[in-house]
Length: 102
Image 1 (cartoon, rainbow, N blue to C red):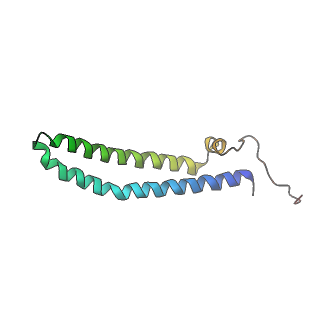
Image 2 (cartoon, rainbow, N blue to C red):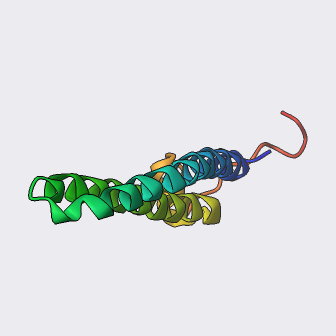
Image 3 (cartoon, one colour):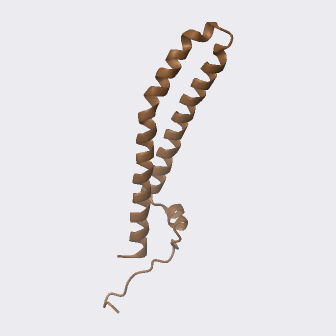
């Protein structure tokens, strides 16, 4: 196995880890939307504005986290030159094991 193959495997494992974070955040999203929906009828009261802003920020934060984790997972999965440099692999030079086993 070459060093680049190891980098590719490591980047795919990192992408899988980030996908689990996306799933975890996506599971929490319906609860946050329901909290926002529950807070909306209280908006006729002056103090209700704070709770609506808080619920909106929570939903927006979760959606942003899902989008960023997903973009990072795709970036790691593609394993381009940026990821290879991130893991310390020189893109121009591939280190391989000798074919005769020495």
